Amino acid sequence: MHIQDKIQLIPGDLLDQQSLTSAVTQSDPDEIYNLAAQSFVATSWSQPVLTGEFTALGVTRMLEAVRQIKPKAKFYQASSSEMFGKVHETPQSETTPFHPRSPYGVGKVYGHWITINYRESYDMFAVSGILFNHESPRRGLEFVTRKISHNVAKIHLKLQDSFILGNLEAKRDWGFSGDYVEAMWMMLQQDKPDDYVIAMGENHSVKEFVKEAFKVIGVSSWEEHVKTSSEFMRPAEVDFLIGDATKAKEVLGWKPKVDFKTLVKMMVEEDISLLKKNSK
Ligand code: G4F
Image (tube, rainbow, N blue to C red; front, side, top):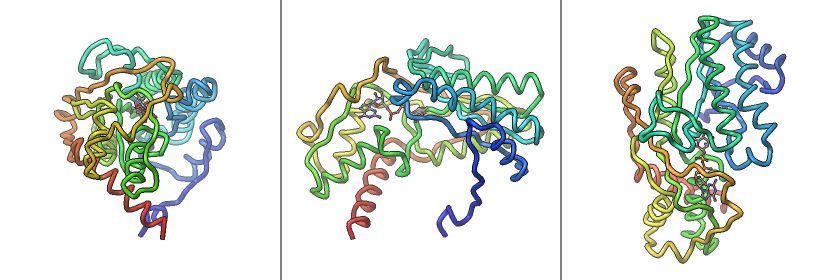
């Protein structure tokens, strides 16, 4: 059975307090995971105000709905490694200072602190998971990992010969979304609310991701197929992220199962089968 057939959707909008209050009333939840945001970093420069409304103030609206209707429900806020931005120490942990580099990152810092503030002000079970980049075949095509796996799959199937990226030198600590969602759930099963960094503790450049993806289709001359353009460069870049998830490992007992190479292979292979299925 497809996942969509197992769940009931209730409409809600982070810009509309009443819709959130009514969604919490209707669902009467024990656990709430706020994963909603304007989450594409690049768009946050072209829509900074809207990004702030969703990614920052939207968290307060959600917390208010919970506080008013179901204050005993456990609340998870999706904080982000983008809050570390121009990093102040390496690796980044729960105590590393924030220095966001985009309107998105700034909005996430607000969401992070308002969650902690509701915990401290109202004694709510509100936690913040500082997740480093997490990827899967379900990632949107605008994000770099899926853009790469989708285009490499197309090259493999001879549907195109090349594609264009931005900064190939940026480094990210990439993990598998399935592992990271398990960590979110673990955070809400604790007796006490607290904040945790979730990361693999190793990083790779965009270039390494590209090389690895081409390796999956048996191509070593990847440079012949990848161009770069300033169109995909950002006004302020986050150059280097690597997380320290020691606390999550020790307190939650969290252990990721999918490593970098397996993740890249999974994404390229899924895109190849998806393209084949869609061409039938
Ligand atoms: O895949 P990205 O767009 O992800 P980014 O900016 O790291 O943010 C993602 O992870 C965060 C942490 O979990 C989340 F909070 C956030 O919501 C989002 O899910 O870009 C990754 C890197 C950047 O350095 C970017 O400059 O890849 C570089 N890059 C190079 N060429 C590109 C491209 N990014 C995109 N999207 N498209 C390119 O063509």
